[in-house]
Length: 378
Image 1 (tube, rainbow, N blue to C red):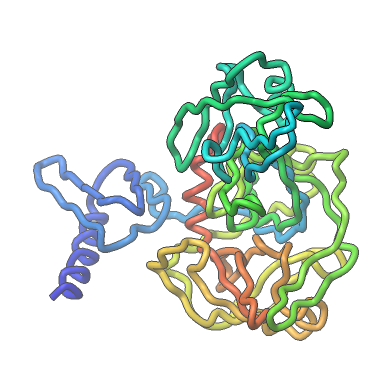
Image 2: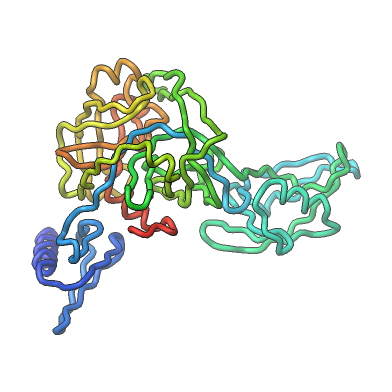
């Protein structure tokens, strides 16, 4: 009975879409309600509508320029992330661990004594100059809370400390997936940047993408993923990073950099248009130039709980297999092309079979990019 209800829901909404007037904005993971001007109501959670549906565009898909260019990424966190707590010898000869039981790995310290904290230096200077207890404003698991911590004088340097390891930035290498010529809005990686120690998604205060050159490739092997080894030019920025989300990083490209990029757009597919079978990817891991390589889409899970794992793909191109052994770290974000459309991007590699990995749907990336502020198109 349940299967019949779902089918009817899809048929009903398809019929409704034909005559509804105006723009339709849909949150794809919440119940959808539709009202007709003459009365009536429809609600369903049993389907996903095509992304970006807009009656004024006559159902035309969004067009983007697929890239596949290797880039360096640097982001500065929105606050200072706690990695963990420890102990130290105090001037009184006792062992102190002020942060133990108060701070947790993954906490974001936003303020200390009501002063904004943006960097590790901000925090250490405030702690060192404090005369008593410190009140910290934290963001933990999406909620804000205040805690009080008592610094102690360290024996080695007579500086007040709270016994806490923190991080305020991170950097790495990934792949630029697409950009929109009209606005310069881009999407990259296809998955979020997680803190290597806490495994928490990093909240972005600001960030940048930079030129990167692949110097060598450590080939993937069964049980040991490969990786790109190269250099990042920190003196030049290609664009800013505004959002780090579970489905990728998003921002806007520098206009000067945009002038050097391809201009030919490609329609973005809905997940309903993706099929199992032959496809290609764009990546610049070989010879530092963007090239197209053959892959096979082995399965498509249109209702995947994890958006970064909507497709299972296998690298089949002999040239790419010879160079990398399959999917390697740094290829995340390489666009996937099928039937003249961009359908998604590579996100993960299978540790036990580096020729295989996961891909994210391009519609998921485009939906998420709407949350990147100051994006006038989405």
